[in-house]
Image (tube, rainbow, N blue to C red):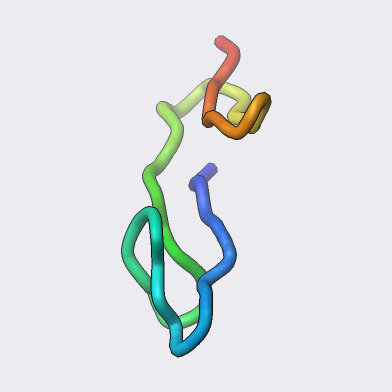
Length: 45
């Protein structure tokens, strides 16, 4: 599972790197459940 945020105007990313569709932030470790809470990224084991 990967963390993404929506790209801004002209494919700009405040966070992450534009991957052609969205802004890629990072991948969650395998075997975990990623989620976003309070404007931060977390994962549960």
